[in-house]
Length: 488
Image 1 (spheres, rainbow, N blue to C red):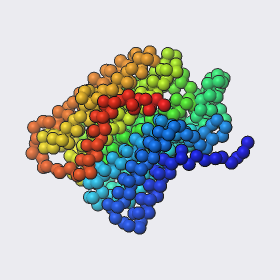
Image 2: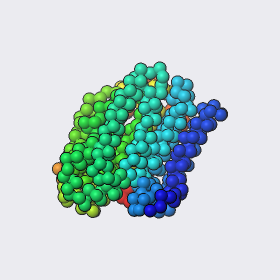
Image 3: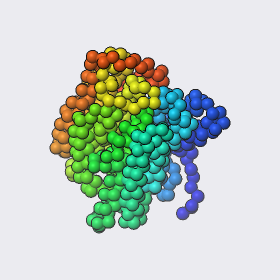
């Protein structure tokens, strides 16, 4: 067999664009040293990455770095969707970072460079075809966030959040790597499809205690990345201590990356009979604990953080149908995977809109404050308050937030198709439980104002909030398009 491989550079174009953005931002900041130019270059790079990912994906599935039938880079419809969403989330976070960067306490060059590096990891993650590429891409997405969380040098809360995030993530990465090493020891393969095929064909390997330990370690390590209970404790403190735009990136792009990584190994590599019961239990615990604790929160970002934990439970719920034989048929599996991806896309759009609204209503370089600080905000800023309320209603799964409503319906439908009716009931009960704090927060926005000073939202933040809201409304009317792409 020839050791010389042909490389499909077209398939790699989205990765080139993302990595090129990071390098170009670094050079522009070094040579020009102008905040506006640096941010503009990062924004143009993110937009170009999204466009490149969409164009390459529209041209059909491509693959490269192949040995026989096993490939390390697979660019298909789902990879294109992930690449586009990650790049657009980066662009949105750059837009809502304007007040933070203008306040002068956060260096613009380092900030934009780290965001571009994280974007590169997210883009590569969607196309990963083997465990090494998957884990390196996931760490490339996560490592810059350690620094971004603590980039406000004078903030003690930021330093504590960065250390918490770093320690927990390092442990999670170590656990995942150990699981991957054990899987390689059992199967002799790192490519996801080959790994899954080997475990499916060899019942004796599936019954080995070493295989069970390896699967448990991989699932547990990736569960940290999506903040699933009981691996969630880092999320509220980290979100609350990070700058608001970084918290938004953690809650959207980072969570999307964790879901994509977990979905890749569950769908293509790990035996469904082992992962299904674990994921069903994780989903039920995550949504229940997240919603119950969110009810007691009085700080805005902590409430959004705990609601994000609960939303991770809804994302994992379709994969819980794999616990039953009826949920492991081809149609049921395809519906479950598509539902998980589609729900994640809907969620990150609504979550970005919610964080953009918080940034618009809070002082520059400030934290999220308390719910009392938002009292009457919609009366002082009708458009911002209306967009915030729409995002909250969408996260709750109520009309007119059609994107969130369709997401919940998609999850329940996939569970019923997999005969996991008990888990569908848990989802429905938790959706009702979540109404209490989402509607309470929305009502606070329209309560009688307490005389707080008016804050004029920055133009870039208003634009990001408007675009995210419009995008959520549009896909709410055409949700099947997202579901079709996610199913590829």
